[in-house]
Length: 132
Image (cartoon, rainbow, N blue to C red):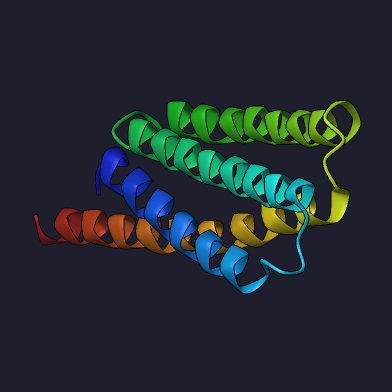
């Protein structure tokens, strides 16, 4: 699966579930909560797309480059997410609970999706290698 297709699926999935959540909770949320939920969802989606892009980029490279990209990318992405949450809470005054809940919920869901896609890709690749 291309990175563009993966990103499209992630954006559509996040937008649809977020719209349903916001519609269902519209009477209980203030505008700051909505912004925090949106920020968490955007951070998780961008993290997922970046992770998949690194996997796709490094798949055709040597094992050393693969691990550099994956581990270095993970460190960079987690550092960025931590900084974004700190800025969101301390500098922008976003409510903590909606921001962290949204970020973690989407992070876990998108991680499961990413692992399913990557494992299929690896299975397809190893199947070709064994057949030749």
